[in-house]
Length: 294
Image 1: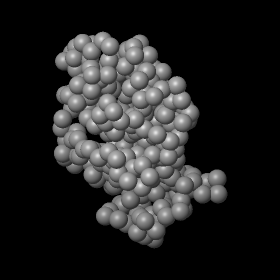
Image 2 (image 1 turned 90 degrees about the vertical axis):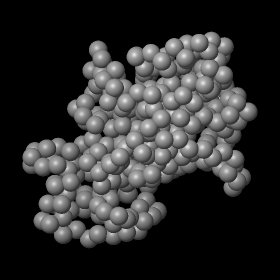
Image 3 (image 1 turned 135 degrees about the vertical axis):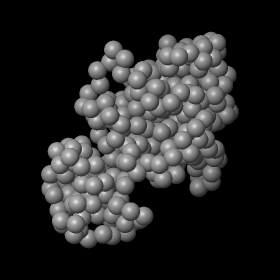
């Protein structure tokens, strides 16, 4: 199952993608269930898995199942999960290590962190600063080399993984390449992160290591960049990364974690305003954002 959040007439609703391309608006039948956290709590209180809870809900309420496209067309998508904090890992793929060595004036540090037990982990965003799916993400006006980073996003409630989504971890290669101590400025700025369009429940996420991540970038209606990677190319497991994230670091009730990218555009490439970034993960969907200068 997958979950979407939409906003209409200042009202938030949770959409359940129940099976195949069929779904329903659970908030229409239970007004209190308008986000994943409440669904998680309701299922927990009923001593049911979320799959069992939704099956029971369908049996009890007989909601109208519609094609997902009909439900979501012309609706305003929100981040499917609203964490209090978003954290991220870097240099978890060999390709990322290579490209960051190439951009940096101090390349050895990236080899060391790639091969070390301790991963690179940094704070990325608060939930309130996340960009909605479909809305513009930003490139820094004081940087001349900016790229998206296509990543698997992990959603946690009470330190427990409840599902996965797609993350766009926007970054300035110019600023970080100039000096690694500028990492936070390269990573944290207005409109620098988007998550969406939905969350796939961990109960439905089978063979995660086989998931393929793709990124294409359009400019003037032409695809100017198109590459892909795979989750199984990560050099550290998601569980290991989460353990390091939690060391001496108390996470809030809801948090998200971006797991790094294996897709890095070449040095001659930089994003420009009005480019469109499309990041896809099979079984999850596609996160699309236009580019603006901030």
